[in-house]
Image (tube, helix red, strand yellow):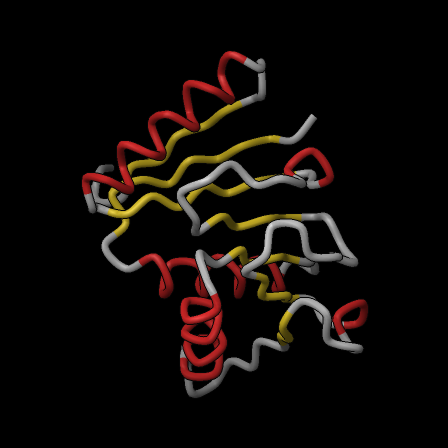
Length: 141
């Protein structure tokens, strides 16, 4: 069963997702970053290129011929064909369609109240479905 980790109170979801992806790649995991739309997917692409002057985070968009050989895939269509299923980082306000295919799901929830409300609804739904859940609140020790 997919383990679901909620990370809430995140001031910059894109930067946070990039740091999670960097950590995943360092541990040899493969990760899918699920964006809200094409514009956010493009912003993620740019953010991965500029995260650090010393890190190279190999990534492609879903559907790219190199996707199966690339550790980070950016998708904005929840129904996209995804070649690996270690980790899914959800930046959308919806429950990912393919979440059961992944070993781990990260729900990234911003400080925006409507994003937080959508996140709370997903948390309750996952809990009712007996998914193993954890919750990390940014800014708290």
